[in-house]
Length: 335
Image (cartoon, rainbow, N blue to C red; front, side, top):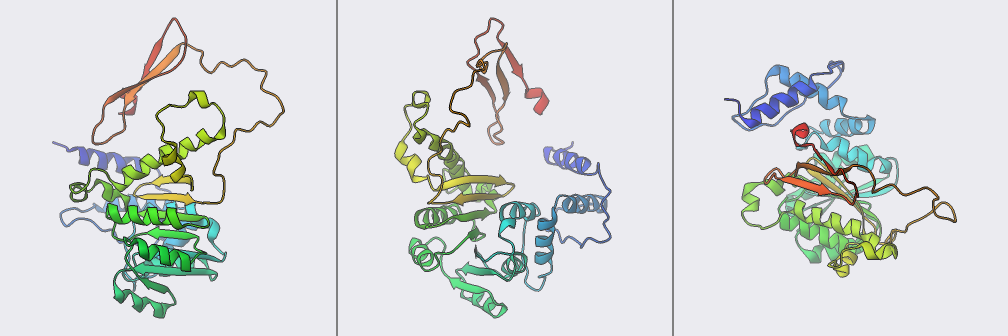
C-alpha cells in the first residue's frame, strides 16, 4: 500500500519532471542530506537538481555559488533558502551594510555572505561557543554571547547601532527565537531586516512536547497586529471589533512587513517609518460609481481549513443580500 508520504513524493517528482530543458552539465553537484534509511533514486536526483537550479534567479544562483565554494567551511542550508534570501536581501548587494548571523559553526555561511554582499559589507557572527573565534583569521568579526540573554542583546545593539540585517540560525528552540525577536523589537533604533531560519522546528514533536505554542504560531499572531495597525487611521472605526487590545497592537507597531517561506520567516522592523497606515484618495472627491461590492448571487464559500494537524470544513459567509443564496464548495478542487 502506498503511504501518504510516498504519494506526495511521487506527485512532487512528477510535477517537477514536466520541464527538463535546463543544461545540467554546467551545474555543480548537490550534496543532499537525507536520513540513514532514506535515499533518492538517480532519476529523481536529476529532476531535483534540474528543478533547484531552474528556481534560482541570478542573485540566488550567485549566493549559492558563493556558499557552495566554501566547502572547507562545512555549512548546511535548505535549498529553498537561497531564493528567499535573494528576494529579501539583494538590494543590499554592493552597498555599505552590516549583517549579523547568529550561529557560526565552521563559518561557511558567514564567508558566503561576505562574498555575496560585496566588499562594503561588514559581517558579524554571534555564537555561544568560544571556538568560533577561530574564524576571525578569515576576516569575519565574531562575538561570543548567548542569543537567549536579554542583557547581551541590549549591550550588543547599543554598541552596534548600524545593523541592517540579523539572521537567526542559532539554537532553533522557541525560547531562543522568541527572545531574540523581542530583544530586537525592543532595542531597534533603525530599520532591521530580521530573518529566522529553520522555523520548521515549530513542528518538531520533541520541541512541541515542552510548549503549548511554537515560534511560528507566535509570528502568525503578529500578523493580526500588523493588519490591525489600520485601526489607528481614524477611518471606519465603527467597523472594527470591540474586543481588540490596542496596547498589544501598539507593542508591535515597529513591524512593517512579514514574509513567509518554507522553513524561513523574514520581517522588516522599523521604529521610524509608517507607524500609522492612512487611507488616501488621488482626488478631492469620492467616487461617483455605484458600490456593488456586496451584490451578486454568490454568498459564501466552503473549503477545508489549511491546518495540517487539524483539517476541518469551514464556511465563509458574506454580506450579500440575494434571494438566491449560492454557496461555492471548493473542497474537492483543492484536494
